[in-house]
Image (cartoon, rainbow, N blue to C red; front, side, top):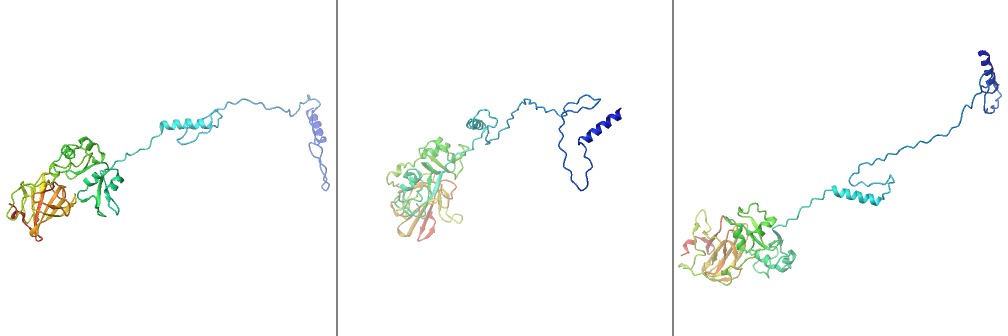
Length: 356
């Protein structure tokens, strides 16, 4: 029975065109029409349902998960998930977040120097220089007594020390204290300490030769500078008097061939003889420091060195015993004193031969 059934199916498939018949080798047969099969009934088998039944795809809801990536500093957020926040709101939110974690730029406070160096050029005046640096003219003059002989006559090329704020530049002497320095210029110790450029680590220990800016200080004229003061001292047969009266610390000789040194801790210095000032000034740091040269009658010339203050100017005529400055420790010096020299006809001589 099974073999008979298979024979019937094969015959049906062949007759229906499922398998192609043999074609002539030279004549191309037309393609058979497409077979549309709705239902297939085979004897002995139940009716077969449609081979293909069209069905609609079913849609299932899928839950979306929104993942927010970490935000790096400076990265702009985008409202890709349509949360309703505007871009401006996101930027504002991000700015607030960054403000909480942003590290502000490190700012180094500006530290003013103690002074500026200024080279005099054509057309400069004391008042004009003072205006450039925002200080009074007095502070230009007071801090440059070794350069400025006449406030109305400046020399092109000379270099001035201009304090960064109003005050006096002071070179520390051996053994000086802040209290002593402040008293000299009627200033406050705390103002000196508080000025950063002074960099005073220990107010009880000052280094000799250091320059301090005495903030708010002024050069107070001592009593003997209010007018020409002449001290009365015994003169020698050659007509000279002692510039200061104190101990001799270095005598004239092979190891000290230029003159003598006299102990003088910031005291007034007198002209040893009447004459005319041919030099007044010098360099605070080197050699003689601040010094004065005076020429006298008879071919004599005297030199007074290491002043802290100079009270005379080039060309000025001075009387014997007139105060010409204050002793100090400027230049190449190991302590406050007066270096005193006498020259005769241009030759250095031993001052003790001409002093009483």
